Amino acid sequence: MSGSGISGYFMPIIGSEPISPSPVDGSSGNAIEAEDAIEARDALIASASPSADSAAPGAVAPSSPSSELIDEYVQAGALAIPGFNEQVEEWMNKLSQEPEFKDWPGADREVLPLGPGLHGWVVLLSVNSEEIGYMVVGATEDGGFRLLEYGSGSKPLYSMEALYETLVRNDIVEQGSSSEDWLAFTNVELERIYANGLQAIWKVTQDGEQYIVDAKTGELLPPGILGTEITEMEAFLPPLSELISGFSKPAAAPFAFAYWMNPQYHAFDVQVEDSAEWMTSVRAEEMTYVVKRFAEQVLSPYALGGYHLWKGADEEEILFLSLDQDGSRYLPLSLLKAYGQFYTAP
Image 1 (cartoon, rainbow, N blue to C red):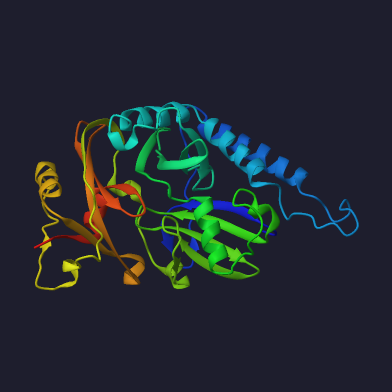
Image 2: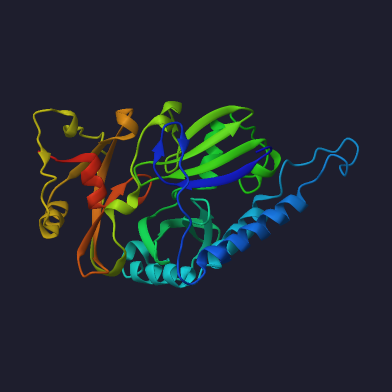
């Protein structure tokens, strides 16, 4: 691929290259409609890209159309899938019952792909052009949708503005153009790679050089993490049907009192299955979640700031815990237990 571009992956990483998942195969023709939207988008992008013959003498042509043009067709592809917009609105309305998400109803939505064939999306929410949160949505085999993670704050997952600031700060791209349309004037290729909430990254290619950036914090990560094996999030999470209860509290900085680094303090028993016991602990204790991500190359501590208890499609209880990371990130307890440890302050 030449020039600037955006693509995404929603899958485990095995070896050095992502493995493409199967397209959505619903009974309502979802995949066909999505493919038509993608073809229309690609045709417009191709027709809008200036050729060397048409460029005026001495003019510097952008390497691709504006990001606004691309995003318009990306979102058209997502909204072409029956039920997508309605399901997103339903989750937004349910979450707005919690004070942390009270501004979500009526927020502007930007839908960006996390996988070929619209297999997954990140939905960025904003009010008056200020980002206020996000949701990650995955497609199910029967044509439905899963809410994989969500969070609030001004630095959501896969924020283009945060990525731009990181690339400028590290002299990967030159400062000058705005954070909204800088891609149209730089020779940068982007891939959104998402396997689960603990393995969400940008892959940035600039003039043949590759950079790996944390999709939430903007931190530059070791390039070798693309060779690590990680697991899809669907294995940990059934579809959600109803938000039962929630709780939030201020989260302490994990390095303010790094008790979790002292081996004499034992981790909270991750084998506990009772949601009520977990909720009691989160309410009463100062807790830190610690995980070694990407084949133990990156150590990440997160303070716990609350929880949401959901009911699944089969009436089972599904607990999401809030990790503090430049705003809240609600991730399923089943995923967190599989990768890391919980510590309680002495």
